[in-house]
Image (cartoon, rainbow, N blue to C red; front, side, top):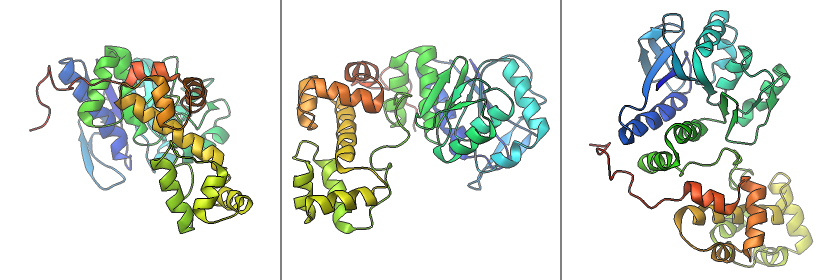
Length: 329
């Protein structure tokens, strides 16, 4: 399958390199499954925002033939690139020859400029989501998921979410077992579901300025089965319950203690489902959620899949290198 990744001057290097490595690793499990090419508005050296340079052999205009997957990288230069009519026209031409089209990070803004997201549900880096929605009201922007599939159009959130999107494409093409093996081989998450929020619990709030609260968050995340009620947490922080709730909510940007605890426990449950064979009742008990029914409700609320479905799709103990050549020397 031919994968074409479009980059531009000032692109985000990982937007290209992450998916490219996913497809290359998948080709070790299914030999020759993918053929990855990188193109740019003009062939030659293309400098990434981090200073590294990639050499491309084909320009948008010179690329010929059918394409299985067209993927567009983002980066800080996207606001400038989208003003280049030749680039946008080139994307339209390539998309017409592709089975499916995808974007990484702010690359969604380039797809939108080309009219490829009209009437579609799409996501992008959370910092660019408002701009995408305001500039392109014809696009149904959802800033929360790490990637979204709408028909033959795939969009993903910021930077590393491009790896998740590429793993999802591999799963669609070659099956979930191969995608899991690729993830294990690259030592990344075992293929996070697209409905997962861009924001993990620690990422979802700014670091509290008060040291007792910073220590308390670390305690919550490390001890999900402990008593994490407001009275218990307030006592640990040395505050009255009312004062603790007010300070916590202020320091967390509006997230209440109870909401933080639930999100932290949901993440703990996700990790156990990926790494262990514990029954759901045991997972619920170890993460402070009590019983499997509560685990189900909380997991659906935060990850948008059931615990059982998540485990069936993303849990594997099989060695990823058992049937292929060792990818590292």
